[in-house]
Length: 366
Image (tube, rainbow, N blue to C red):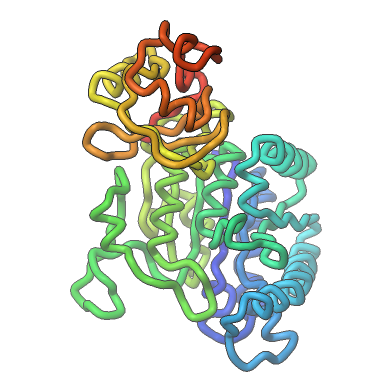
């Protein structure tokens, strides 16, 4: 284990207060520095910009209006980085600010550029401190929370572990704030719908991510071959103790082995439509050698998308089983649904190949 992504939530930095607590931040930095000095590669995904902005501007309440939130994030981000920079300076460690939006991790060229920049920083022994670019992000290009952003980063960088720090010791069988009999779930082999329902709910007053977003992030990470742990940020030396093998929090096991970069990107890319397939096509996709998806096995197309779009693939039972890059646009696919590949040219007047989705650009979710 060498490359660790640590997501630091607003609640970890504030301890429930309306402002950043420097001693909380120092605790995170001390642990990151200790691992850095042991040869680990540390990537921080840090929330807290809006809380820092509220503190700097003495804003009394958390606003609802998006422009005001973005204004607070713009003010707070520089303050947050100043605090991180000063604290890492104590340990003579250089840091770099990286602000990302969903497009930076969805559009292939921008994804590759962002990944290469982060890898170069890591190679130079610089600690990237990542946040969503809240100042310019709109609903269409927002990841929405740093839990999911941290999972996308862990996948892009082929990390060895993702640690998400929060105000709870991990995932429980019920809400421990309401049910004293709730028990900590220490290990999750696979995230499913029942688990998602268990975790439903909002985050803290100052943060945007609740336990549900952490589960979604853990699922993304696990599907990319990266184990994830949800743990309590206030637990003393929580990061160091996890790295040293102590069983803290809830661990989510990877549901696949490490995947090649292109397929990790397909897993994390936002899908633009859906392709439904029959049982025979699903069996072909799940073969050990992996088949391409042919039009003959497609039963339905949902959404409007262009050629080379990332789409979800659903089986006959309605379960999402894969992501893939389409060889054809949605209107073309609708014309060749259920057709043999030899009929494509007759129907469309041209052909981009026998496969609707080639196996090299298709990845099973689990």
